[in-house]
Length: 177
Image (cartoon, rainbow, N blue to C red; front, side, top):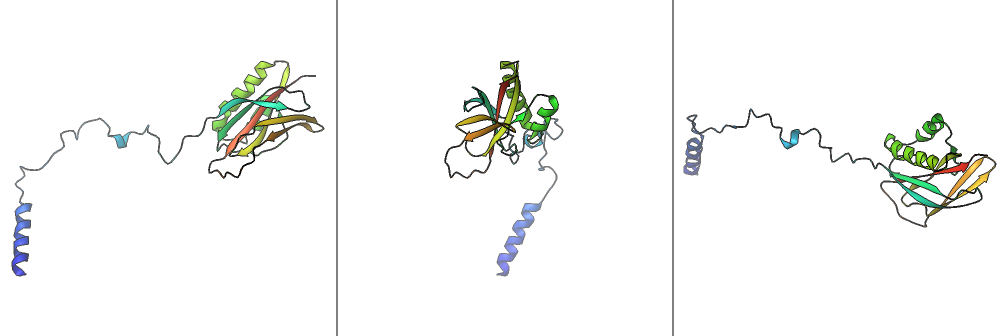
């Protein structure tokens, strides 16, 4: 056993000899090129990019006389579902309505409001957060009521549980009286 220990120690001594001529140096150590791990513009994989939102036309029925509407939706932008539509007749009203959402949703929502208002310049835009969940409404019913316009979504029957809920906002215009 002593011979084995002696042989191992001689092997270690032979490997540790250093006369300075066999040391490795990095010729690129003074280079200013950043390594891939130093690139600050690469987003962190733990922080997913927010969904900027998507707009599409949705089927409308109901007694209010509204024939078309735009549904804007995005993932995890917040908001609370309500059947009551908000009138968006001033910048403050738009800001108040948009304040319930993540700031990343302002662009798509503002574009949908602008598009609806542009289609009917003699009309007032309205919006309602019709659903927060996994599946999109198939259509909406817009009815005139005592408290304003009520927007009721037709949601599919589903038992899907989602990890990232979608927020669905319907934007429409009503002709000025």
